Length: 169
Image (tube, rainbow, N blue to C red):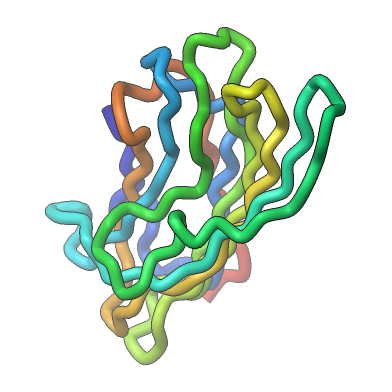
């Protein structure tokens, strides 16, 4: 139902941890959201307070309209909920998937909050392309040493998540 990267992978060796999402597809046919949350205890629990913002641009296959929107419903304000990085993926379309990245910046710091930047793109139920911009921070000075990804319902049916470490400590 979820995929976690624990302290074996997020261990303070790097200043930036970059997750790449390649053709992530849900197992359920309904519209689902893809999200993440951090842990300060190696993945025993997830629920770090997050503050974030979420913007989207879109364009349907019909070419009928396009636009940019601020999606305040996807923002978090000191919430321990999972942070959406993509919404309304329709698993009933076998060709629907999500691609993008999440950068977690200096997660091992015990002085500063943990900033993140994400950009994802996916085919929504309309069908239309959605290009998502998410940024924020996990409000803790404890080291983030695990990240979990999951859909709001069902399992991860297919896809690849790659993790890279950048900027050795």
